[in-house]
Image (cartoon, rainbow, N blue to C red; front, side, top):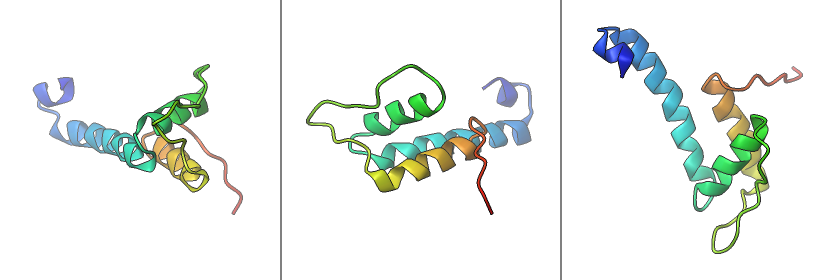
Length: 82
């Protein structure tokens, strides 16, 4: 909001794109709580990624997508072998 209010539309758009990567994580578990908890754990927050029913745990194939979203948002650096 501050970037927008200061007239920095390019900066506001850049920050908005970062947030969109994080919001996309909500689609990786049902409900998005599991993905949120796993993302927090990957960022070093001492939290269990376990969720209680009826929420479902994050599917194993979504774990890498969460890391990619965090990396795209500039919150996590992943060192991948090429």
